Length: 197
Image 1 (cartoon, rainbow, N blue to C red):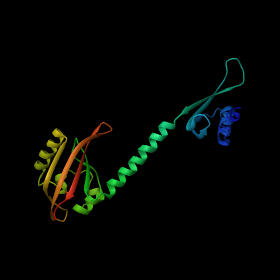
Image 2 (tube, one colour):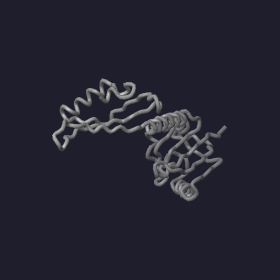
Image 3 (tube, rainbow, N blue to C red):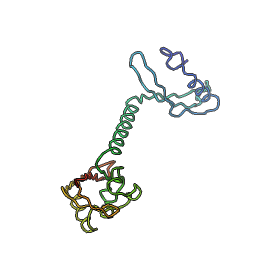
Image 4 (cartoon, rainbow, N blue to C red):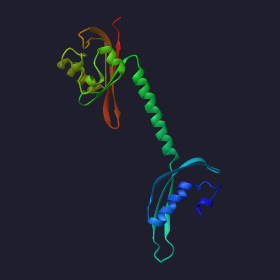
């Protein structure tokens, strides 16, 4: 029996129930995880899939049980999730404004909380807008010229960029933007530091 193999690592009540279900009602097993510390190979995560099929010579029905080692994939998923949490925490708590733009259209995709504090717009007021619409450039043509330069060179910097907040207040900011790829899509990240003082 499979549950007698090795040191009993497959003796899992839920797995036994699922395998009985495969035989009795042809209910296949899809993506059942088994995590175990195996004696020779260490801690592993195995993915099990099973289905019943009838033998051609009228022997007892058989179960095809596929066991795939997904340890590295699971570790990679955890690493990505950890990285995303770390990035989100940095993004949310940064004491500089950060805007994420679609580098093809120039529209804002994301804004960190410091941008709300700096300019007075809500998050929803940022998303879908272009930089000139939130007071970062004096008009649309100046915004378009800066955006063309960003698309051509992948980087722009302004040491002193005049800025107008939602309430009409003026501030000076340092503006740095660079383009990078995310899932084969060009993204522009804009870092904005208030240098008024």
